[in-house]
Length: 428
Image 1 (cartoon, rainbow, N blue to C red):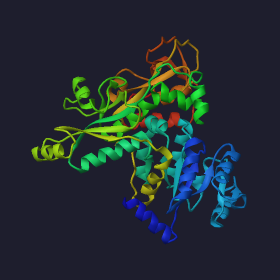
Image 2: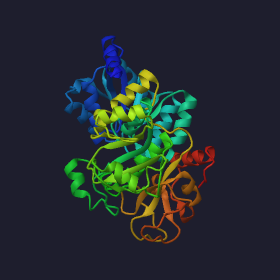
Image 3: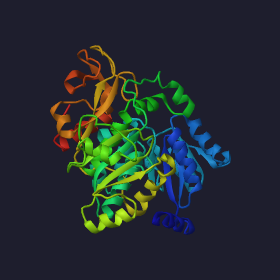
Image 4: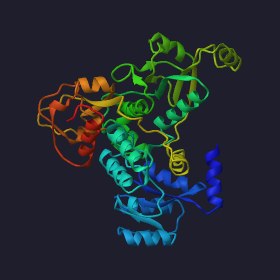
């Protein structure tokens, strides 16, 4: 790939891309480790609320303590960076302010923090690449608009499902195939999973309980596919998508039986294929069909392009490199939302109850087209944690803007209202 050669040249010319990483949990720590092994880019600033966590990540990666400078003051941080020290801070907005940082990678997974960091970076003219689909699905359209106005890149990452699917879409379109299904492979779906039911899994894998819960109950899946929808224009065929039980051998037949190969362009998911993502693309040219038959890709006109692995932070640094080298986003909204993720009750909820948000006990998320989302006045799943109910909500019932009062105010609510106004969405 050209990007690897370009990064090698940056290394040879001593023109290394300097990256700040905000959030050093599972994903962020992996980003730091991976970039320290790569040529052409280096994680020079780490920001984490728990300072020792960020220090430990560098120490575990082989950086001596003598090269790590703890700084919460901008001028001190600037001097440390200029002295080729690794800067560690508990001030999450500080990396965006440091001159010489080429791109900020945010990996907190927190909707509010993600919005704050992105806003700060954009305002200060810095590229922002986020491993935070929760933020992009909630306020990504307004952040992308602001980034375009400021002349910087706003993007989610390669290596996670949305970024890999965007690469597959580009690959198919580049060969003159029309992508018709962007698919996410889901091994297990437990709609009513909670942090308690997922406690053992989260401990075993070193991830936060809310992340394990959002993955199990399907919220993460729906958020990821909303990001793909907003970047490609592909739509969910049904509320929450259909979820096709299938395998790689019969996937084209099963999607045809489910009326998904009907001329539309959809985001979808499968049950039965343990991992990976796929694109079903169409080509009507007879010569292509003959040659693809010879190449053992089937008789057409629909073809399966399957990517079996999701390598997360091993691939994600490439998105930071793309932002700096080519001024391009791996995956970002095209404009107004075409799909959103609404909040649905995971259990019976009482009037006066404050909702706990993504990956909790109270709600799960389902993707809907923007038209249906507006028509039915759904509450975005990314905003649920800021809401208090005004009435009882039954299990599996949607939660609507009219059902809630805002429990808090802040940047995320301001951004969401600005996004709704800009794109003529129904405002809260």
